[in-house]
Image (cartoon, rainbow over all chains, first blue to last red):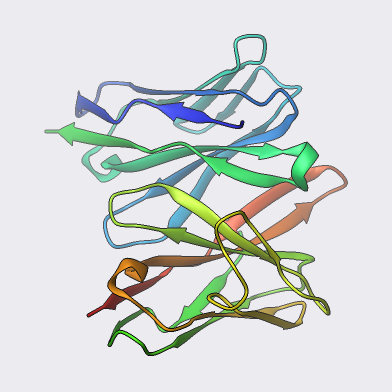
Length: 112
Length: 117
């Protein structure tokens, strides 16, 4: 079945780059998303990438997609303490009406 | 970006009662969804709210427990019926927007935090 995997924790120092990784299983995915959830809040859409793209850059965020390996990454440049949150990747399943399958979430901790 | 609001933002309920959660989106959308996020967990799709017809439920979720309404293209409700402590979760509304011909984005509301005693 469909599955999305993420590492659970990442700790970085302020000013460093963070790289959050995600693997997925369904080759019919059309869009892949990154969401941010701060404590007590809902999900904020950070960025997304269409499956025919390799890379997308949006200010401090860079998304890399390796479709052959079904690997997605989110790089946050110059990480700040305000970036501390849980980051979810999600794949959109073309064969199931665009249903989103979420990873477990990666908790990013940014230390000053 | 889209604006999605939910009411209530949180509630504490007694077991055996029901709670209806409302979701309002800022523009007409074809597809609205309801998700559940259990404590410390990821998101699980409960159902797709279809305008003018019955909702489509995912495996493990049934209409009697989670009745959904979708009276128009900007509004939906989810009811959590006959609640038990296991229903304590965050319930999130989501809507899919099409930006341009092929780009689709899916936004989420702020969530409703439910605690069942």
